[in-house]
Length: 218
Ligand code: MG
Ligand code: ZN
Image 1: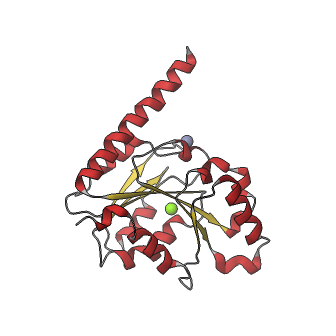
Image 2: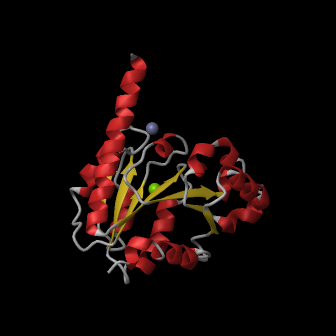
């Protein structure tokens, strides 16, 4: 009977995720769910990326965190609409929380929505939020063993960003080993190497985002 309860939780999430996706589709909004461990550089990546996108598109961000509005403040400083979702200790976002976040945003006219998940390489991967594309961020500071150790995180990614590449020479991160292990769990995802100091890879990232099908509609 306990298994029944667990299944209902997931079904409820999947229903809310479908509702989110349908609503976003109707509004012509492409949604990206950004996942990665704490400190992998998700917010820094958005800080580098958003200035390139916001002249071309109407962009907004949902920030998921356990506590504080620090990440939302960094996004708001770029003059991009942002809502902070606080999970109050919860270790992942779910589709219902995203639904509540959506209700606080002006959605009409929006083209792009980024959802920064709670920094955690484990359970966020199990929750469909209603996104169209999944971006996983892996920093070289975390180690090249992460694709093998957290395969679920990488398995369903559409894009894998290897971040903080400016630190490569200071770490034992083996890039070819990481790329090989990524391919073992995900043969399709695009992989882009970035660093937010020299802005390496940020144009490539911006082009990948801009190539999404919903954006070409109007
Ligand atoms: Mg962050
Ligand atoms: Zn969790």
